[in-house]
Length: 334
Image 1 (spheres, rainbow, N blue to C red):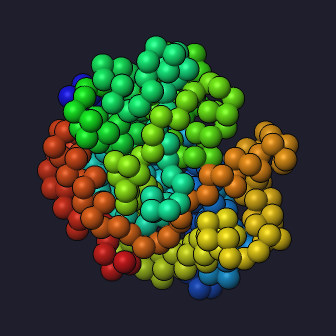
Image 2 (image 1 turned 30 degrees about the vertical axis):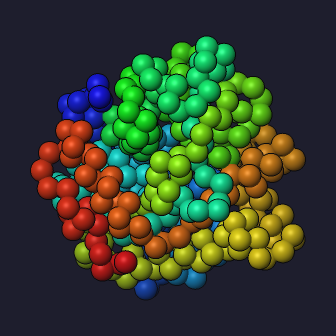
């Protein structure tokens, strides 16, 4: 079914991020300079909260962000030492780097959860007008992905398998490029987090035709990962990062997911996230997308979901070799 091969998937790993290499002082003496890879998505809010509310400072970490537009370049940056930690989806690139002893997943992050609005399945307006009203109607149609082996590839493949259909997977490298292709009708289908999906659908550029949770109800969407060297040789730094990240996630969940912190806390949280997400929009226009796109962020890792993803990479021929949990995940942190 999948028309993309492992050779295609690994081709993108040759491009590395161009960030300064860190030379941090010993942990515990002064705040350790730390670079965190992220996307400008609401789903990365735990890191933003930890930064803005001083949780990283309290943990002894002087954090700067390096922003990316896709998951696999972020994995390369962590493996090469250009970033210390990152939060993004498990990709073929991340698995391949883990197999080489370069990276380790150390926690969960964003996840699908029953009762919480999650990632949406989209059809371009052109496809919708031509009869694509539900995921099954994507048979023989094109599905947008960033790179082969990306989370978009995994979701599309699982949807196609569940519906018994075939789709053409088109790698477009960046989320921005995918949005442009969806708006212009150059691709037919895609899946993305709700804070991006809903505004696109509201403007009529695309149509929501399903939910990813209908096919992957407990999907571990993103994870926290670092280099194998940091995970094994700097456990104190790794645990300090996870502690601050967990505090940020708890604040975010209380304000916008569980809504137990009150209206003022929710407003403050949206303003905080807006410093990093939809920065080109006025606050009042950005607010609905941020509020409507809130999904659970937790350091708990859904191991069953991760195992399913790893099995998929193997079955599709996107990675070679051992894809067992121990190769990819450092379970001491779980």
